[in-house]
Image 1 (cartoon, rainbow, N blue to C red):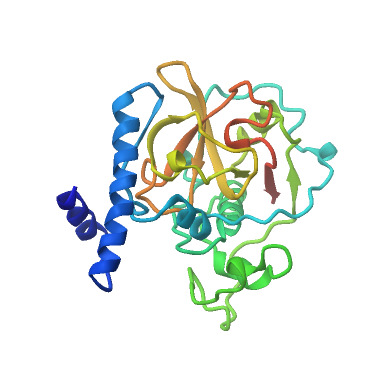
Image 2 (image 1 turned 135 degrees about the vertical axis):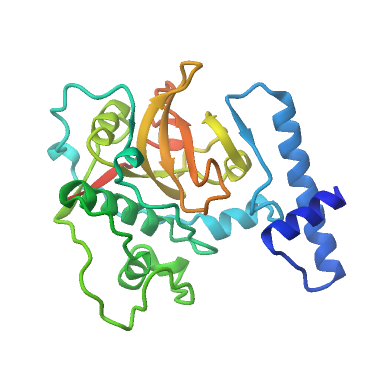
Length: 283
């Protein structure tokens, strides 16, 4: 276990301030590694876990630094634009048509909402103009101070893509947004068949923290605290239907930053409450 910890430190460029700090983090690393090994050894789930960038964080520390979504009010979804869609493809991956930018990393900032919103905006811009442009999450952080309060309270030290003090040409715009009817995976499927959709989920569980591959089926709570973007859907070889999501925890999480969350699980809100609060931008 000591050797695995040293290999992990080398891989992720970690160091500790003193012997006591290293011993403390090693214990957390060992507990997390034991949890991952035990889960994978059971071999009774449709997904696997792996040691990743978060392996020396307790789940409580992980939740504090990587989640933190604060919810605003929902619009009436009676004007749902995709309601009349009657046929959808059996599978969809918006990456294959060049409508999804690369995976980004929110860092130690509870601003997943900005990344989920920007990802969907980048995609609708590409689908309407043919140009895929990486847009600025930092701009949203600087502007949205009422509901989400910037970086979980206004940390401006994390500049992702721009200097907020320097005006830049407008790279993209939307005319508004629509909410998908809540707790309706059929409606959500119609929307995703036409464009990527931003959703809120529960991202706080240890299994989700260390998710690596396969179709994630739980464990999840019903309270949402994280945001991702659904960029497709499909069905695996075992017949498990899934949503394809783009996360903002870097490329070491999941399959290069993407993951599959079970679809049509029988839970009205969806796995991890993924159908609870979907929305998408309007061109």
